[in-house]
Length: 198
Image (cartoon, rainbow, N blue to C red; front, side, top):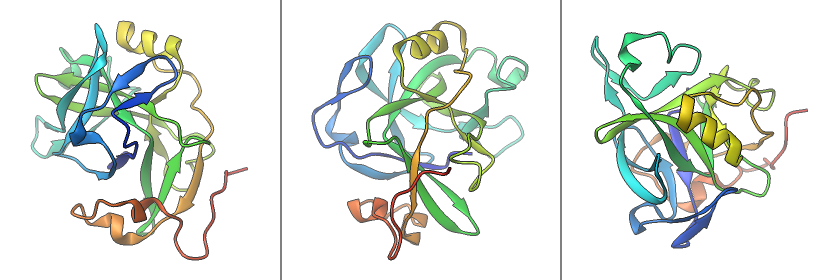
């Protein structure tokens, strides 16, 4: 599950491992991106031009589909006809016992989530949690950091076999409210420091 994420960079140009991307003002310094909001996305054939997509599809049986399990995207009819995309981020939140934890790459580098899109809508693709996320949640977004992984996703919807190591820390429950969107959301909660699950 991935229900909130961040793109905290305030520069007009952000560096990904495989390219430089111009970031529209709408997506500069976002600390609590939520479903139904516009998210920064890249589409095949234009990996330097960010396009805003709405995060979430109307599910066939009602409700909002914001995540797609990588294990079933080639099987379920609801995913047929969807195109691959990349959703730009630099961290995400997960909850355990209503307590949010913030996950990011060491160094807080920008990266991309594997995504699926149609028209102006998208979903974030998830996989089984790696050892860093598993103590908090059993699912995590598919993170793409390498040029080769990006190419395989965009060409054939193939996700990496392993997810990168992540750093995390507990954060304020203020992130639970969508209207809160400021730098304090990603700061460690009182008495908490960044750590890696070992």
